[in-house]
Length: 195
Image (cartoon, rainbow, N blue to C red):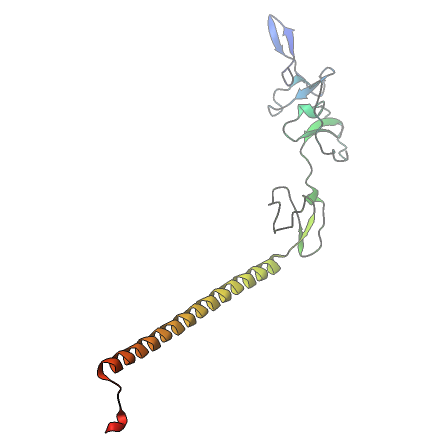
């Protein structure tokens, strides 16, 4: 089974086929060194390996003293790791971070994979892009929006209060006119010139 150690007869039983720099693994296998290089075994490679969707970095490592293939193809690597040439070895490598070598202009930053994908509405950079810092502008715009909303709410409150005062004044005028009419109907018209 893929990833399982290869067993070889040894004495009266079967034992893992060990590997190292002087004990290479047979074709179609790789040397699994997961146990901190204390016990390395040859394991079966995937015969129909998946191909991870990124490209290995250029092989600029020149160590040729410790040559040990710890993978045979991408199927021998975990998660998104890829089997890449590294010096005289083939080993599982993490996808390189494009921001490690990228130089962004001042007042900008390199978008990393672990950052929120859309820092502002409508702005969704891909990892490795240089993103202009617009925090000050965004905060200023947010403050303007808040001020406009507060002013609009205050205007609405003032208009409602003015309408309430006008309606109250109209009710008072109507009550006074009705009261005067009732008094005149009961008492008769008041004539101040009769004195």
